[in-house]
Image (tube, rainbow, N blue to C red):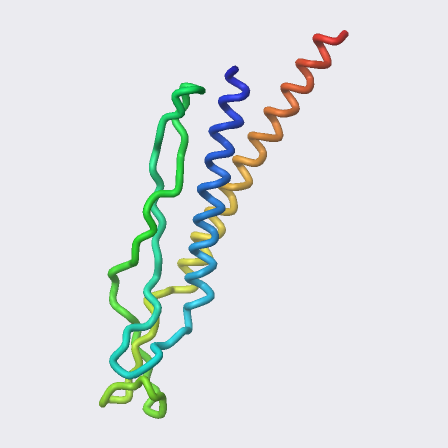
Length: 136
């Protein structure tokens, strides 16, 4: 039963990190999206949180994607006097997305995803070897 529990825990990690990577990809895709009109706010970076919950059937603590919140940090400004969304000084508010931070977060999520995938693969090999021993 512990092997099944380890697969369930790793699978919950896979789902959580997959959701995290989708949010990060959305942030990266909108990193240079300006506002639609003057005075409007541009895209605001999203930040993922995780929550822990208990699977009573397996008696295991699993992880799930929590609330996706908007980052309250200040927007960047870019001087573009010809842009229709520019203010009186010629500055345009740009998203509060730092592509470097997003790439680091993406790499971290990817490594966590790979670690959970390796755990599932190892557990499956152990189960298969146990079955092979029992057959012999």
